[in-house]
Length: 322
Ligand code: BTN
Image (cartoon, rainbow, N blue to C red; front, side, top):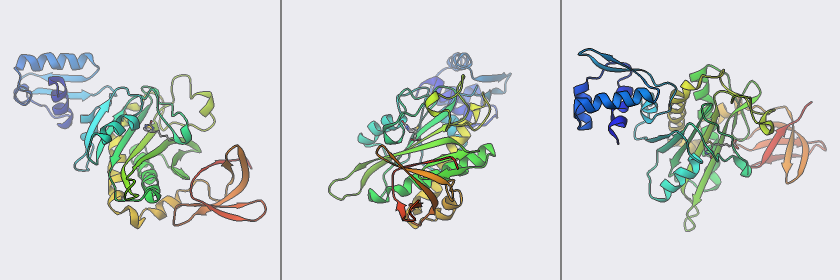
């Protein structure tokens, strides 16, 4: 870690209480003058740091920046290894490289911007700077590939809870793993796994979560304008750190007992599609149906126009107007 990073960590973790220059100098192994230089550099980066005569320094505002220390200060889960990046191609791609190099479970990468964010079914996930939170969590679960749906569904519940706690907005889950607020998608989840061919189990899974906190300047891109929504008014991206922490905490509260599906009732009760007319997407075909509800295997029960019922285990559905 650089001197600047050590100082920023100490200021953030002290949560507004002053930290003495001497303590920071000792921790960073530098002179008091070097601490002062680093404080000036942080101010230039947008951090508001007050210097109190003989009292040390306090961090008044992080200027909306996403930092590992800022997330850690709000986090309750033990053993999380955090990296926060200003910009990255995709946090899932970045974390996959770390996973292949042996990074442990609970390694988390968060970013303020993705230049090549990925969504489900090979789609792009637009992730412009200053508007969202993009985060990936490395898991090494003892699950089969088939059971990995539990990671995604638990993550949807964790994201819904976190959004409600941090922003006060009510949420619903659109099967399988989109979180909606006021009928608009505010959060998408992409879980990618690497298979152990011998055991048929997962070597690791990467849980990627993307949240639209505020709308981009000029609005959402035309291809997602009808679906996408934002959690808060423009310029409110400073809730990123508490939101990231709440998502991590809520997910790891569920993770140790995933197979017991303790979160099923909560998932089902938030289901957005129940009773709604939908279209089941099969290749290029859209089949009209009505969503009935979620079964205990997190499948979406649907009934087609001819009265035939089916439980969908995977795939995409879209709502259709009445
Ligand atoms: C979807 O809605 O189709 C899923 C979107 C998942 C987006 C997140 S953002 C963090 C992580 N990195 C990615 O490239 N994708 C996921």
